[in-house]
Amino acid sequence: MDREIDIFLKRLSYAAITIASLTLLLLFLQTPDTCIPRDAPLKPHLRFPKSTCDFTLTRSHLPTHKKNTRLWSTRHWINRLQSFTDLFSPLRDLGLLRNHSKVLCLSAGAGHEVMSISNLGVEDVTGVEVIESPPLVSRADPHNLPFFDGAFDFAFTAHFDEALFPSRYASEMERMVRPGGACLVLVEECGVGEVKDVVSLFRNSRLFESRNVSLSGIRMTSILLRTIKSPPSS
Image 1: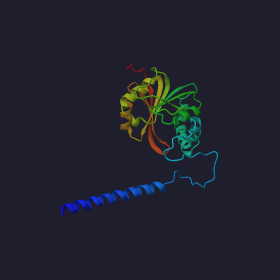
Image 2: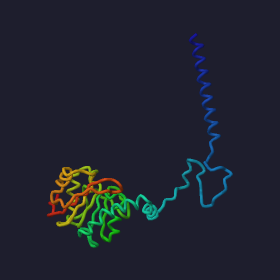
Image 3: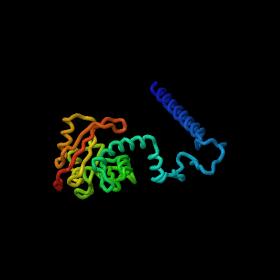
Image 4: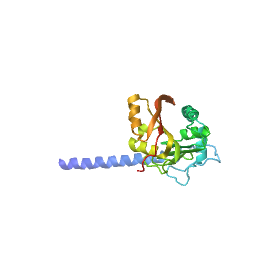
């Protein structure tokens, strides 16, 4: 009895393997080499790979300047750029942003703030981020900036909330600004107590003003500080 069962199971296994093999062969024969119909009209400016494993053709890459031109013309970019312009314009009236000012933007992302300040007539604007975004933003760690002490007149960040080490971030930001210069920090909208907590991290600056602002529709608190002396070298 056991021998008959063993023979039956072996035959069943052979049958299953045969069916699976035939199914795979049928699928292979019916799968087209390309998604383009064989009778499609030829287009001399387009070339398609013969199969999904064809590596002889490489994708064409847009030059950086063309990518940037597309990006900078989008509605999202233009609207966000205007938000930064509305934020920075009053600083010109305060004399904190002049044409000859040297400005540093930390955690500058794609560079909206860099472009906005440049459009206001400031000639020397440097943007830094962990991942570069040329030509507006260069690669640098905001917690360990590669600049001399007091190299800038004005420093700005809209991403202080995202700092891994807020104290170190504040220290480096403050170190970059000359005595009498200014630091502008944007944080999530908060009250007086939270503003004092942020200001306390800037040990060589004093609070100039704080106010609630809107950046691309997001409610935030703007904290403006003036440096009062050169921070000690670390």
